[in-house]
Length: 589
Image 1 (cartoon, rainbow, N blue to C red):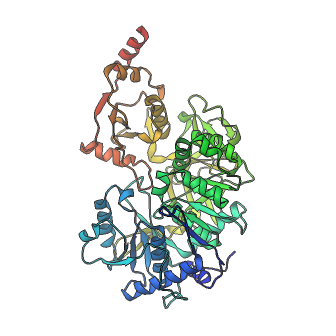
Image 2: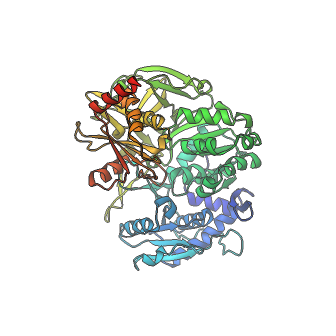
Image 3: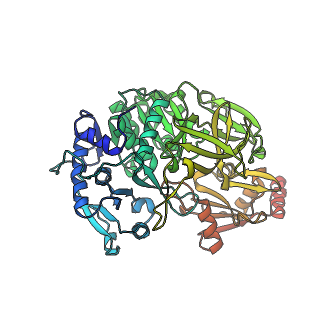
């Protein structure tokens, strides 16, 4: 275990040269290469910027909002704020939020949330003009986005009082997939407990190298890649999400060229590479150096892992290198992780058997190296998330909060331990609404089988009709297959979660309007488990509301639908009579 007890300790050790030449390697699109900045230089520059913040009155618990495109500028501001005893919060930029106005609204929201106005850090090369729309109470500080050139440096952190392990290190915004955006107060000790727990869980050594394209406003990018690498002294190759989206080969080629041993991404990232990287380019890669492909942050799909392992097997990707994990901002990042010595697997469940404190019927289980047969008919595939990391515990409870006992019984996942954050950011006068006893009810439905946790679904994303449970994710996949689109382009939601007879609505985006004969074919071929739906909405454009990390916001679909603001170009009523007529016509043909 490291002697460090706070992130300031880690930065101070970096400034003293305790990490050698290790540091960041930042992808430069113009030069088509990586710009290197050692952790020592990064720490000293951050201390100097922290002194600037302190001179502006940003210290001793003042919130420091960070709105920068550049990962380098973001991290100098982030580490600088921490070193000045301020509390940084990294905000998503306009591209992630959908518009510059959305960023302005977010800055306004957080800008008046606290007892004293925050300071806003902007990079000097910022092209957006949104700062002119900000209230004058919010002071702004500009920061260069270039790692080269002349930088002020300091050898010591500027804060007079060193932080304690239990002090707030930063505010982490949550993904907002289940409600209005929140922020979680993360303590220094939370971060160190989590990053050391991850390292121990998968037996990493001191020679690892990491690469990431994940956004720094997201816990998976900030803690799971950046802070993890900093605390362990691992070199980190870093690119932006936009650079990855424009050219996903950059990610895998970066691994191949730099011989990186660790990387992490959500399901989307692996699926995106499968779809956009050619077989020729895949064959030119050497990914045998990777020990751990971490995957989490959203439902892990069997088809994605099967496709990724099959496509990149020519580059040396093996099923045994895939590391499914489960985590959330409330637990800093990782709660459970699949261990190298235990082959990861999928369980195929009978969806009708899934319910709180109910035994789940398992149709079949398969290891990752045996996924070529597809999902058994009618089953829901759920992926292992492994076991809890050190200093964390997982339990399942029923709808009354009582423990669910017995292997194979489903329940709400409750987490407890040293990685659990201090609490949600509250209102003025109560800065942090603290989690009692370091315990959080996650709102996720899971089941423990043979000691491993399997994540089933968000509890709010289970539709109950006539005593039967229907998983939204399973319905979306079946409908996506029917329409020939990705599951990411389908959202299923209830119009009123409090009314068991309310309409069940399907929104399909990137789908052109259908002629009547095409509608009849769709209705005639609806899978049996989707017959409970009441209407289908089609829209050519990307219209499903999403979080900044890309998760579908089902609750917001419902809100827009009920207010008449959900855009669509065609509405298809789904009724028993219409389905019967479509079946009759199809059979006659």
